[in-house]
Length: 581
Ligand code: DMJ
Image 1 (tube, rainbow, N blue to C red):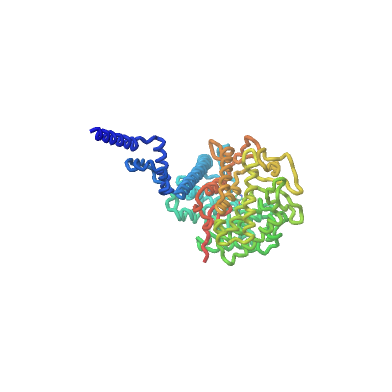
Image 2 (cartoon, helix red, strand yellow):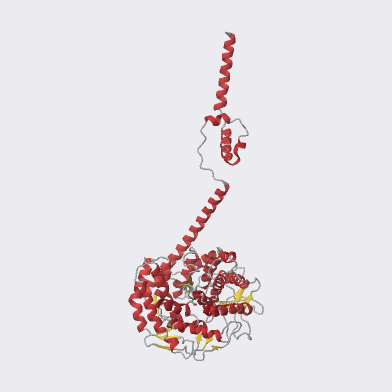
C-alpha cells in the first residue's frame, strides 16, 4: 500500500511537471519562438537550435503572419513603391501645368478672344501679329495634348467660324510668324484631331483647309521675290508681298518655313508649298559661310547674306534648328546636304562661339557681331537656349542616349554635341537661378577672358554663378519664353536624367509665383532681378503654344508625342515625321 501510494504520488508529480512544461512558457520565450519561426523560412531547420519549444510547437497553432517575401521580392516591392511615388509626383506636377494652362486660356477667352494676344493687366486684347487670332491657334494643339476638351471645342469653333474670313480680309502679316504659329498650329491640330476623333469641334479637314487657304496667300512672299529668298511680309487681302523697310529678311525667318510647307504638300499632294520653301535652303547651301555659320540678315533682292553679324540668338537661331529638323522630317537622301550643313555649323559653333565663364566655368555661346575678323562678344540671348535641345536631338535623332549607346549609334561628334547640350542646358538653367525671381532675363553676358563687369548681377546672392552672369539694365525683361524648358524637355527625353524635370519644375514655380495675374492670365515682366518684379501687361502667344506645352510634356510619359515620331516646329507644334520611302 505504502509503495503504491508513493508510486501514485510520483506519477502525480510527473504529470504536474509535464503540465507545467507544456503550458507555462514565458512571453519572451514566445516572442523568440515567433522570431524563430519567421527566420526559419530563410535558414531552414537550423532555427530549431534551442530545442525546448518543440512540444509547444506541436500543441500550439502558430500565429498567422503575412506571406514572407524573400529579399529580392522586398527590393522589387520597395522599388515599385518608389516608382509609383515618383510617378504620382510628376502626375501632380503635370496637373499643375494643366491648371496653369486653363488659367491662361480663361483669361484670354474672357478678355481677348479673337485678338492675337492678351494684355492681362488691362484685361483686353491686342493685335500684334496681324489679327489672325494667333493665341487661339497657337494654344489649340496644347489643349489637345492636355486633353482639355472644352478648350479644344472653344478654340476649334472660333477657328471654323472666324479664321477663313480673316485670312481673306486682314492686312499685313509677317511670313515667318504666321507660318510658325498659325499654319504650324493648324497642321498640328489637323494631325492630332485626325488621329483622335474624340475631340469636339470642327472636323479635322477644317484645320487643313484653313492652313491651305492661308499658305496660298503666304506663297506670294516667295513668288513675288526676284530670288529664292522670300519677302518678309505679305498683305493678305490683296495678295501682295514686300520686303521689310530696310529691304532685308532675317536669315532665321527665311529658313524657318520648311517643316510646315513640306507637311502641307505631303497632306494636300500639291508640291508648290514644299518646292518654294525648299528653294530657300537649296539656295543657302551654296552661299559662302564662316565655318558653317551665317550672318543674321539676307537680302531677297540680291539673294546674298547681308552684313557680318553672326549669332545664334535673335534672327539667327532657327536657321540652325531647321537644318537638322527638316532633315529629320524626311531623312531622304537628297536632303543629306542639310545634315552636312548642320554638322559643319555645329563645328563652327564649337570652334568660334563656345567659351567658358569666369570664375566658375559655365559654358556659353557668344556672338561675332562684326564677323570672324571682329571681336567676340560674350552675349547670349535667352533665345539661344533652344540649342541644347537641338544638339541633343541631332545627336541621337530622338532615341534615348542609352539606346543609342547600346546600339553603338553615336559618333565621337554626336557624343561631343550631347555633352555640349548638357553643359549649355545647365547654363540656361543658371540664367534663371541667378536672379531674384528665378526667371531668366532676355539677354545675359558672361564674365570671361577679355570681358569683365561687376555690379550687374541677377540678385540671387546664393547662386554659385552670381559673378559669372552679368545682366544689363536694358536686358532684364522676361517674355515668358520657352527655349529653356524646350531644351529641358528634349534632354530629359534623351538622357532620362530627372534633374531636367526638377529644373523645369523650379522654373514653372517661378512663373507661377511672379507672372501669374490672379484675375486674368500671365504677364511678361520688366525686370527679373527686382522683387516684386514690375509686370509688362502682355501674355505672348507662345506661353500657351510652347512654354506650358513643353513643361507639360516634360512631366509626362515619353510616349506622349514621341521624339521618334514627331518633330516640333520652332513654335512647338508637333509635326509627324514623314515615313521613309
Ligand atoms: C517663338 O515664336 C519661336 O520659338 C521662335 O523660334 C523664337 N521666338 C519665339 C519664342 O521665344
